Amino acid sequence: MNKKNRKIVSLSIITLLSTLLGLLFLSPFYIIIVNAFKTKQELFKNTLSLPITYTLDNFKEAFNELDFGNSLFHSLFITITSVVLIIIFSSMAAWMLERTKSKISNILLMMFLASMIIPFQAVMLPLIRFMGKLNLLNVGGIIFMYIGFGASMSIFLYHGFLKSIPKELDEAAMIDGCNKFQIFWYIIFPLLKPISVTVAILNTVWIWNDYLLPSLVINKPTTLTIPLKTFFFFGEYTKQWNLALSGLILDIIPVIVFYFFAQKQIIKSVTAGSIK
Image 1: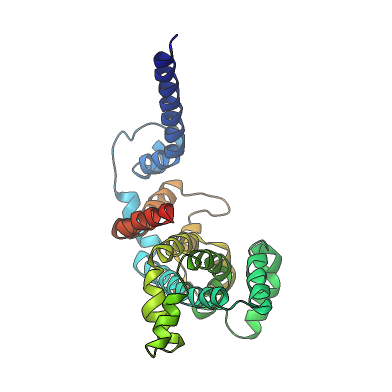
Image 2: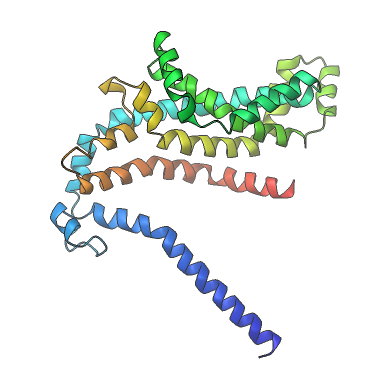
């Protein structure tokens, strides 16, 4: 076998393995979508087969059971508010830590990085007890906690990106009469757009899908998020898989819409990261 034939065989094997791996990753989505259109009896009869008769009754019932409009509002409010505040505060902190070369700034940066390895479960009970004493077991409290948990990784990402922005820009703006806030907001922050998109994506996916923290903090039935509402399909004695799968599709739609509108910025951020 000559070199050209070996190359063709190798490429064919890689293509086959990549296709199989892609199908493996897509299989959960296939199972969710296919079974969302089945009746409960048909779902348990054959999980992998296509529906004999497609029905939208599952989506209608799941929409009502989820109180989808109210749950969607609270999920969007918590996610958007938390992500926006994480982006603003983390970029500010990272900028000051990167521009201020001192032992204190290095210690603070190391503390932020060290907090990334502490699992949430290790501080879960003391944190909830402390927040309960402050009467912050509500929507405002969970946003405050999301900012705290999301800041470490975001500061780490911003700090690395800021190293590629020359300090001379800050000095030139200062000579022109800008104060610290103006330098950051009008000069530095617009340049952070590529990494801000990355930070927004990572935190949006995490906060939108989070179940554990909201289950500990949000107690009012009127302020439950979509993951909390979806859990009610799984009772102690029965599991409504047909409604749960339909609800999951409804949950995914806002994320798909977010990706659709942000895809240009996502591509730009990936391209900018590869260049740098």
